[in-house]
Length: 249
Image (cartoon, rainbow, N blue to C red):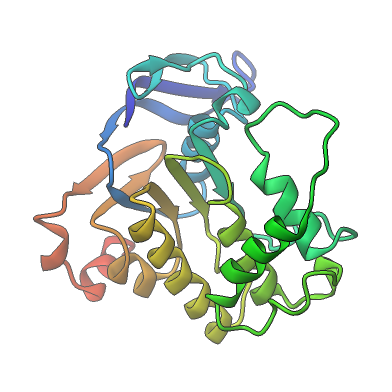
């Protein structure tokens, strides 16, 4: 699904403060894999996610999605494959719009925008049905501004919105880091259910050792822009949370 060949990203090239955020990385992520990426701050995790999403163009190397070269494609062209959930619950939604309006925008994320009726009773019922599956009681509040919700509620809806349109890859940039423990657990469970239901290829960046151990079928550790550990679906079940903790010592 994703193939990365000798990917390098330099910030401030040729200057005294030049930084190599990605250092000649090669990586293949197969269809249906749920990859967890861990590493200290500055290890290159977010830069790698930004490179895959297209929000950051790399200095050298190649990137392919479904064998199509996307190295120089901007972010909006990659949206036909990719949806992304950010750490901040405010980043994935429009605060002043209602829940229903946010879902409508998400449902046409990859489609040409034309003048037509956006929200009818059929769409409203569809959204209510999807939201009811969360068990949060928000299905009767779809006309409420989404900015009035708690961070956990908003993040849960953001993840649900990510599958309103066609996608194959879900990028998760510490989606539970800004939430209280109860909301974080809820958001991660919802995420796992959606990945399983829609057979998505997913990448999760996390600093949470419990989540790194509990979720995903492959785990990668990064350090100084390089991949230093890569445990596949056969190896990951044998890794304990203590093992992951000790990686950082």
